Length: 256
Ligand code: GLU
Image (tube, rainbow, N blue to C red; front, side, top):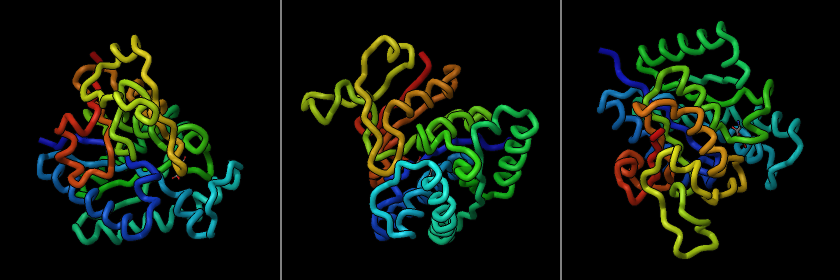
């Protein structure tokens, strides 16, 4: 029997820290991937961070607003980003491959089939695909989503039962936690219940474009039946695999 697939998305903020913090994060992520494999899951990673790597490479501190500049910075940074994954994951014997996609690819049946077959082939070879938006040819994620929605569309295409969004926040809160001390983390929630509630969503960080709004839009794309589970949680947790099961440390989402 073939393994189930899990899609894990990593936000820009988690790999846009100092090089020591970055390599600590790569280490925790590699251990998480190993744990999934031990539990018969193949992992497809979606990673942002090309723009922030490009900014670092070119000595730019403030993220530009101009989309063309961001596209070019992404082209500069993608090389370093994937190299860092390769170097850090090699230590854990996790072989990686780079896959660059755009939203429009999912609209074409031929391209969708190509994506599916190349990813499945990589997984059969025991290789972890690392996906990012192809920023030179498309701008959807640069403009709105830090790859949240791209990862949901990919998860749908490859029939993943789990979509995990690691970010720099703990998950969804009952109120805006920056302004309300009594805000509590929502550990379990259904999309149906969410649509009846007004939840204050966090903005994106300085480097990414995610925020809870785009994460929730991603979950709306992904959670089409109750066999699927979505997670939003902090990538700063010590054990990224164990924190998925800890209701104090994540928001778990279902359709109903
Ligand atoms: N593809 C972009 C990157 O890797 C997404 C992040 C963003 O929108 O800032 O940097």
